[in-house]
Image (cartoon, rainbow, N blue to C red):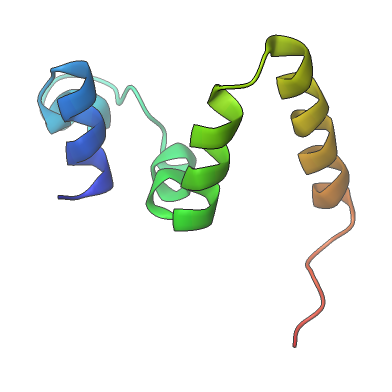
Length: 75
């Protein structure tokens, strides 16, 4: 089952509701859909969703710090 289909099943909606095919604007933007399709990003989302709000903000700060450092070294 695809990521969008699985997410739609969790919320009890048709996948088209999440991607806006035929019914107005998409609920999820393209960047979000791509992140959900990435296994690692998806795991980070699932794990961080269980954290208390304060710890979520700490994780967000860490992710933003990494984003400011440019791409990771290859190899």
